[in-house]
Length: 525
Image (tube, rainbow, N blue to C red; front, side):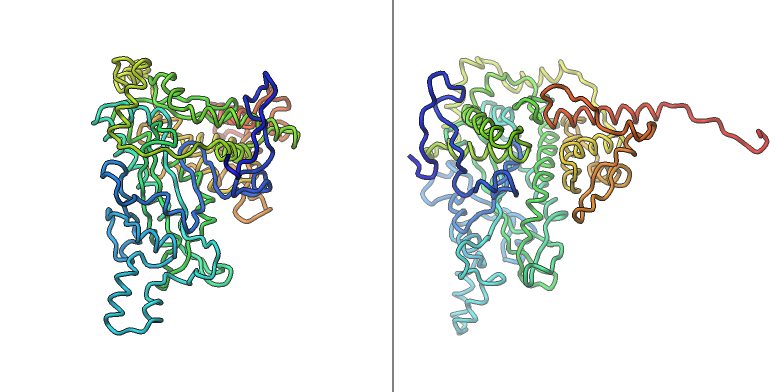
């Protein structure tokens, strides 16, 4: 038994939560305060992006060990515009020693070669040591933060099509995920990354480039298909004066959900364009946001692939009941993510022996022969796309989108930041276009319209807003600008947000259809 998980006494016969009682104790590395207070150390951001503060030894989880077959694990690759400052090139393989130096010690990834050259040139030991340091030394810090780990993964039906399709389909989906991942990381470099230095990080500036090591994973701990990209982002970035500082990781965490929704949007577009499929919403948890899946994929296959997910969901149900008994209300979106993380930690299986991708794909096809038969999964998805024939708006009404985005975020959060509007704007584009290309910058236009017309500064903290409900009801008195007095029974916060958004957008459409008042001239009077 894992000593970090605690005992698992059996439930009474007929218990609702299976064979485990709910143990109200947080998993390793997460305190109870973090579950329901500040953002936890590891944030589960839905199905597309997971972000973690990586410790000095985390790089060992990703590096391709010597002695593995070439096909067994894709070697890590360097990417990011900051590689030139370290003498590296995009696409170079990440060696174990390079990962240890940069992500484990905060030193130059080619420190060994630099030290050898300087020593041969007759430099003293201190000069040699200083030449390989990136910023301040971290030897005196017990657990320094040297990297932030991003985990990119697609929806279950994408994994299924990748795992059970032919070689061309597999390669196409891998290319699509690579493009979506790289564009998301590039957006983080351009719009999010900041460097901080000085006492308490009082000096801050936009970081011009990042250094990232990317590793690709093919299956989960139980051998089920799970095409996942792990990106280790070094916290060592250049300051405007050319010296090395540290990445402002809190800003990266703040925009992590927006990055995840961007990855989801881009991946849907790439797969739709290359494979000719369409997308449909699937409700995973009642009353929560749906997951966008490829239409036409049998749900029996999702159940086959998601046995691990079902185990986590089963355990999470018990944690939710414990939460409701303790706090007197259902968990919100943040607390629900933390409870899911708790369940994943407490039910995690032991690691299995890795296998080559060709062996895994052969095993997956044999395992699903009874469910799929001789049908081509891609053909089923393409047929579903042809049968749907759903008209898709190629142009986005920015005004209506801003109203809906503001109503949803305002209802769910009360006070919110720009990053919340940006994430919701990208969800709106994904739901509206369903894989068709969006015009670059549309998400930013929606956010700008929302902030300019439908939001007001909250005042409690800099950079926070609230929805201006009076403006969102332009044709009614103040008494009618409030939310509905009676919500549907047992409506979740997301369902209430959907209702609020529908009311606001319908009202705006009504106002737009009202006839204009007749023009008057001085001669009319």
